Length: 312
Image 1 (cartoon, rainbow, N blue to C red):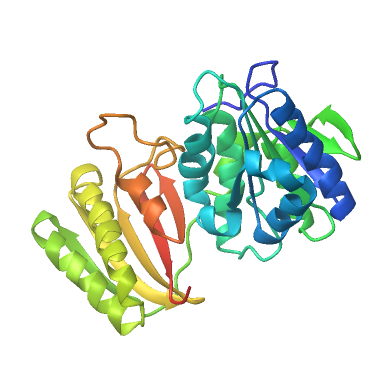
Image 2 (tube, rainbow, N blue to C red):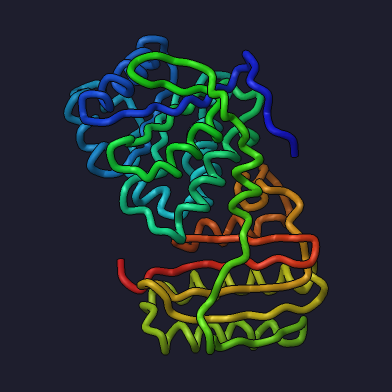
């Protein structure tokens, strides 16, 4: 997959760099109001504190905007494209959708950030040719310089101090590849090697370990479904067998599936299912269920790791 060239195509994806509340409002409120004035559908998906700020400033106009708390809707970066962005744009066919999407904020964990950066890069491929504008705010006073450098690589257009310019660092595929890294795990992790005959055992193994590690019972169905999808994919697409591992880490129960398959499509699991589609929904479903999904894939095999929070 080659980097998307900066062209005058219908899709635009600017990064808005802001340093304070005034800069945030100066870059976002006119964007929303211009969309409403043009009769465009407008959505705002930003962290809760910024969402409340925009609601207050927009006043009655906020009622004409789809408002989403990104800390909830985009908790797992892997679900933002299919559920938040495509979910809104696809609901308004034939019209230019305007979306403010802020997937990265101070407080995102080191485990979450690589998936966030890959998400921002993959937006450019997911919306090529679509009548959509997605404005992504970045807090320059709070975010790490690495995050801001990645933003310059994942966005073809930058907005700083009210000035819009092309990014001379734009290279989204480099970001996708750069965060496709081996996933370290703690020592002494429980594991199970499975094949087609042991798929029920794999699900039972996952649920037993989840219960021992304290995962709330109301998440057990989500775990069972996610693990079933991943292990079945291993049997069908990953060489007929795989290894399931389970452990607790950083307030989550972590489930990892490793097999000999390769994910050739970086957007796998990030496209909404087409109407009437049969199959091909497994990783998409896992993204919808889990609080975080991380992937490392090579020609020699793939590791998919999903995290479920121990506490709400």
